[in-house]
Image (cartoon, rainbow, N blue to C red; front, side, top):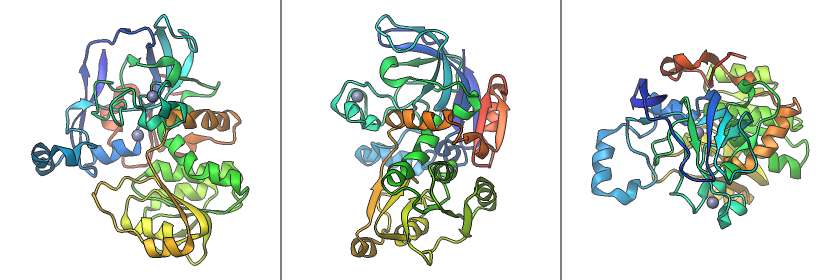
Length: 359
Ligand SMILES: [Zn+2]
Ligand SMILES: [Zn+2]
């Protein structure tokens, strides 16, 4: 079968690989119907994530513990957001059957360990730290492939609602990531205004704005130096308040930092009202990042940062998509067939979705 491989910065290719088979009774084999490019994928292919640096790799061999959390450089199977159809299941699988359409969370989680049972599915203790598809971490493979083996089918797979695969391709990662930055806080304070600081987490910031609008925020403001993302945010119904990272004149009860830029982080933190909630989703690869701790302390803001727990977030995300209130394709800037994945993944806009049938 074919799978997509990250060769090096600016270069992806399809390679032949052995077709996965079921080797344990809790597994399933699925075939992706639509695949999306994660914001992290975009950073990797354009050389903005520290996956390619020879100096870093050399340092990694000398001080491996510093780099425990970073994947290797290429080549490795690439792509980790998809909606799929079940091909076959192991004998212990009960929740899905061949022919079912399912959303595949990008993180591997067992469903049985204490953390999985508490919803901390990003940090399952049944698998190596931060195990996921398509990021060079372990042998889980890419989802930009003809066949994908899902190691814990009952724990991981969520039945897809009856909407186009295009709407679901990113649900198992970036849409869920945007959703968790606003959903719990809007549930606690219905209608509250939201500020999203966009940037490197290109689509996550836009999904955060889209989710905030879908969940009834009375005012969604958006700050981003990128004119393309600002134009998309405006089309979604957000108000672009600035194109430079800086503290806003007003305070917000809910703020989101998707910038992965220290100035964007500061803008979000400093624009959070006393006792408000600020969530940072951008990845700061530096071991130390400046943070305005004194104002955060004086205002008593609640600062949240983590990888998304994609499996735990999925049911709420899919319900919102099924209701028609959340339409993720409004952020898609390139829709292409699977065969064009090596070129399409290099697209500069915020979201690429690849489909088998272009529905
Ligand atoms: Zn991702
Ligand atoms: Zn687990």
